[in-house]
Length: 188
Image 1 (tube, helix red, strand yellow):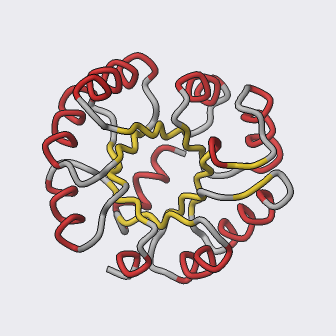
Image 2 (cartoon, rainbow, N blue to C red; image 1 turned 30 degrees about the vertical axis):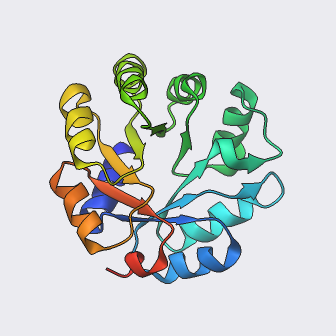
């Protein structure tokens, strides 16, 4: 599972972040090999995941944003056994730990708002060891470099990416992927 994620990002480092059905359709047709699902619910998640996987793309479900799921081990178990996405995304360290114990690919999303959140984030990454980390906002090349050097975990830059320059700077700083809901960037 890990190598498949890295292989897909080596083909195209842009990750389509989708919040609705219209964007999902565009993401499936885009050159993006990886999709982050930011909206869904217990009733439609299986259908969405199957649709994306049928097109040969990887899909990672943001557990914190799915309606109808608890934020516990049962939700992760259901996701793994019934839905079977390529992996999950979460801000919750306890869910990262549970997902890793269940051998699921897990991306920990961290919001960098000040030096304390940076320090806490680095400590969390080094303790829990998610498979990848999405840092937000993604337009902070110095922070991307620092996290990458202090954790050795693959970095995804997301949030506030608005143009090609942001993508290039984030990749130069060491991000292996760029997640964005801006459809024009999916086509780069």
